[in-house]
Image (cartoon, rainbow, N blue to C red; front, side, top):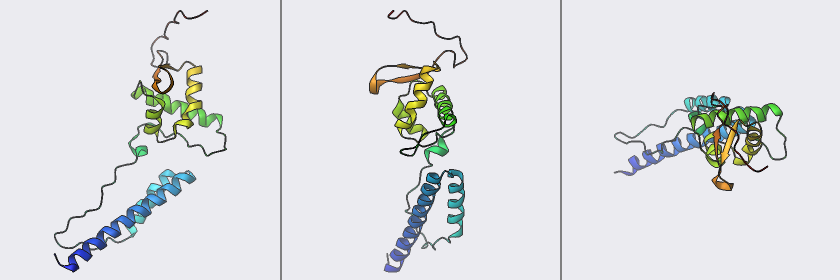
Length: 169
């Protein structure tokens, strides 16, 4: 392989890598500002506007494949992220609770960490909506501490509510 072919491959790789980094940075900034859909659209136009580097003949691209982000894979709307030191409105907490219920309908028995990972938010942002859902008896929990798993209650699933268990009086 000649130096010219090596230089062409390295140049193509660097160009593709630069485009991926620029796209990821744009998406991160847009997501931080609250315009995730605008970020994807602007990244697509930025990638389309930049001409691709010419490939050497017979060379295959060695650029890594980028997996789709969790937010594009999720069938439920994303939970609004919370900035440190800010309060969420009641509507934001209720929307997060609806999202958690929708996720638990599709994936019963998951813990907070699994739910947070699937929704793409920190687990601490789910504490208040889950507490509200437990208080409203929309969901129930099994287990303790890190072993806690959440399920929709019978009323939430469209069934009759669970009969109260004979507990402490």
